Image (tube, rainbow, N blue to C red; front, side, top):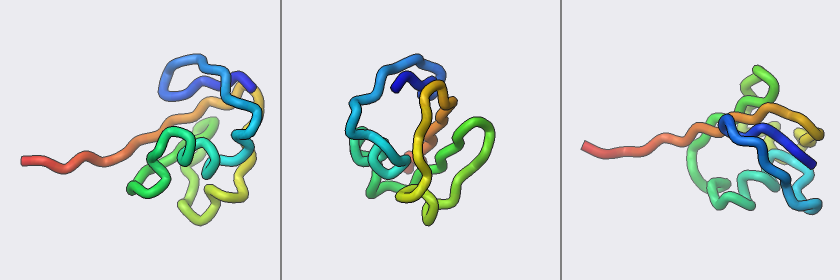
Length: 67
């Protein structure tokens, strides 16, 4: 599956089906993130059940602390 992830076209492995799979693949599943797919912001509760599709536009934003 080919998607646009944070502005970059990538090919996802076949085992990535849901948003949670994607977050786990990039090792950000245990962080506070905001995920937007095709212009729609998802709730964290919907990550496991939201399926990805070819040509989806995905934005993942995570927060970094510092000072």
